[in-house]
Amino acid sequence: MEDKIGRLIILIMCCSILKGAVSQVFSVGDENGWSSEVDYGSWSEKYNFTVGDVLEFTYNKGQHNVFEVTESTYRTCDASSGVLAKYESGDDKVELTESKNYWFICNVSGHCLGGMRFGVDVKAGNTSSTNLDPTPSANSGNGFDTWSLGLCIFAFQFLLHLSC
Image (cartoon, rainbow, N blue to C red):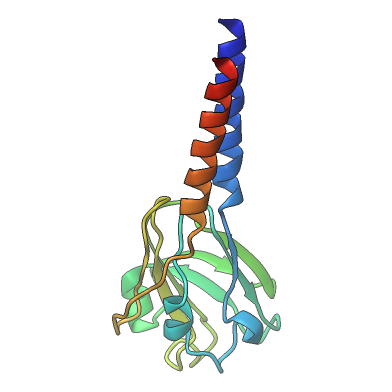
């Protein structure tokens, strides 16, 4: 009996580790980084975001910044209110810790209205996300959650086989 409990604990630990392994780091703007030359609505359409993922904003400090804001602030580009967090290091990592809508802007004069803004709908694992750019479009899945689930099932079957 103790042996089966030990195997069950190992299985639970493996699944917990795998859940963390599916989190991804997304370089905002890909190779262009956080700059005024990227269509961030199109960029965010390429990806599905889930809780635990990280957005990495890379830019020249002093030329840009990143503000996490409310939807209202995102839509108006007026950061006099509705600012939830400010990032200004030039190499900012924002962990998406909750299943919710996240909105980001650059608050340097004219940059937000010029297109340096985007929103993402972060989902809990095993669901797809939706881009929150005003123009809706389809997203493709990243497949990592399916892989993780399959590996957990395999590990469970393997441990079950060992206990028999």
